[in-house]
Image (cartoon, rainbow, N blue to C red; front, top):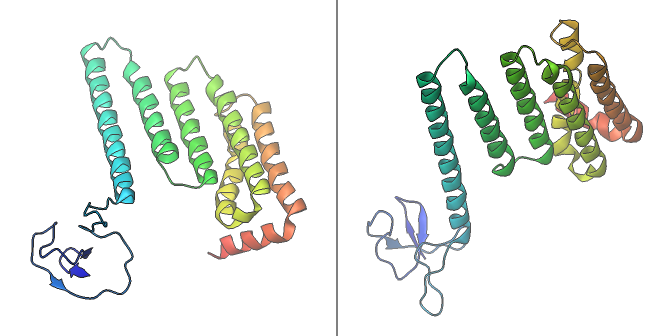
Length: 234
């Protein structure tokens, strides 16, 4: 086995130069190989493909294309709104929608985050998106009054079920669940400060948060207490 110290890759014995930097390499025995070799061949003399590397490359290329498409769409929207401006900021709706879509795809479909983390990020991003649209349409106040409490209620309920049915993943789920449960009380605070006008959806969201965390104490008290203690100590 040969090793290119400059590129930190392992090479097939038949190679005299590194295929990356083209520098001569010296033979050096390596007992254990921890990643695929560049230039390694099978019995037929065919190069062995690194499928994991190809998969990572395709994913990275997809992410780059998505980011470029998002920037291009936002730029076109801003230019078009400026060229046709008549007092209407319609570009804000498009930009908000695109940014929400970009955030959702990046942190859900293309992300390796845990399920609870995806739900948490999705609930926060959707709540912010609804708030922005609501501010842009003053006469249409239902998105803050009803939309945000409904989104947070659903997210808290789903995370509670995940924590209940996936007990083997408590250590990785409890932090996101705890944060999501606290967010369930946000609508009540918004009502107190006068941002939300309708009380009952906010009360429902707070009640679901309270019942969800209470059920964890009731059915899994010791384990939930131990995880919370570990979380707070860290």
